[in-house]
Amino acid sequence: MQLVRTRPFKFVSDIDSLFDGFPLAGTHLLGGRDRLGAPTLVPRVDIIESGTDITTRFEIPGFELSDLEVTVEDNVLTVKGSRSHDLPEGSTYRHRELADGGFSRSVTLADNVDSDQVTARLANGILEVVVRKQPDVLPRTIEIEAA
Image 1: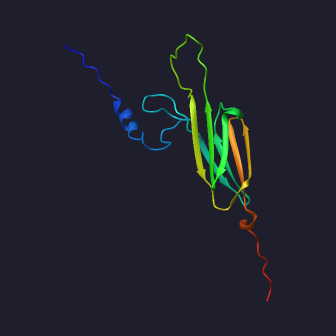
Image 2: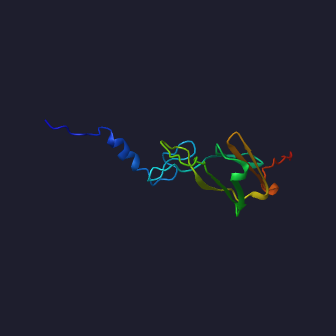
Image 3: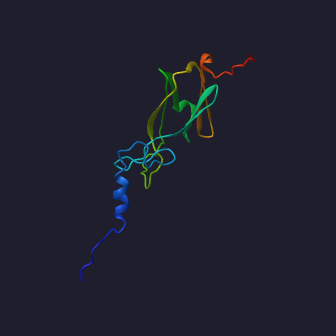
């Protein structure tokens, strides 16, 4: 009798591979894996708009201030970062999930932002970038007079 090897759950990885071309599909806390199985960096983003500003929060655990760069140009907010984990000489990875390398994530902001009024703060793995709206486009209440 001959033994035949089967992979009964191979269909799961086949279905998963269908989403490889979609941006951010199947990403984990800070990224996923590229086609060769190496970890990738893709930070998750929240964008919150209030009456006076737009706040963007990037989830980037393990990054230091010196690893990051924030720019605003033509109403596009871009956050870039890079890091590496040193492997002791003579050592090899037995299992690897921590991603090395860099990322660049851009977010298009509304036309009514003031790119000169930007603050950025890094705390507990969350980079928060606040961009003020221009005063002339802030909502205002109009008083109604009796006739």
